[in-house]
Amino acid sequence: MGRTALLLEVDSDDEVAALYRELTMRQEDGRLGPVAEIVPAARTVLLDGVAQVEPLVRQLEGWRVPEAGSAAAVGPLVEVPTVYDGADLAEVAALWGVSAAEAVRLHAGCEFRVAFCGFAPGFAYLTGLPERLAVPRRATPRTRVPTGSVALAGTYTGVYPSASPGGWQLLGRTGLTLWDPAAEPPALLRPGTRVRFVPEEPPTTDARHTPAERHTPDELRTSEEHHTPGERG
Image 1: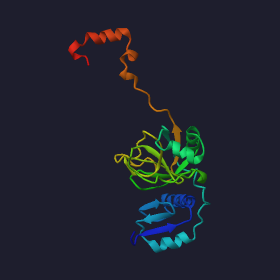
Image 2: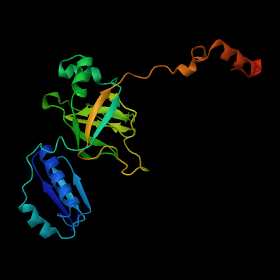
Image 3: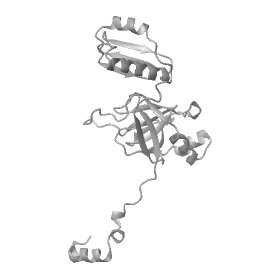
Image 4: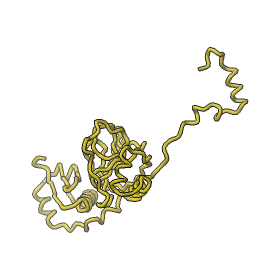
């Protein structure tokens, strides 16, 4: 990453979360010194744009970082309305040894946390699924996963912010916008954010397409008066 970067390695994503939170807190109150970016990953935290690397290394050596897991419950909560009708829901349920309905209950019952972002703009890797519910990636990735797909791989959950190839197991879909370049910040899900998936029913046929249900007889007559037979579809 160059002479103005420092990569810190730890042993788990819980330790990444604790270290990331400590670094951002110290940056906010001015104790960290000039650092342009703090970027968490699966087992590392990258400090980029560091004005003086060696003094920062000496400073870090004396830190006492909070215990792993202590940062898990900190951060804003985002609820993701999800229709659980994914192509791989039945397969995931079979891997877990439960019904599809129980698989939905298990997944929606977890509180997730954004551990880090990557793969595509706005794609967040969410931790919080128990190790016993880990699932493998698909043997053959799909060439196109639709925008908003809620998916699993290993113990991670993710939501595809845009259509792209992908090999994760598809549980369902959401209509939330995960990445908006015009927004500030553009990513809805950022490191440290807590996430809950809220099951919702799939949308039904729009009642606006059935005139008999949305108009009274008087309204229908009025409508007829304003159209010649040639104008009616």
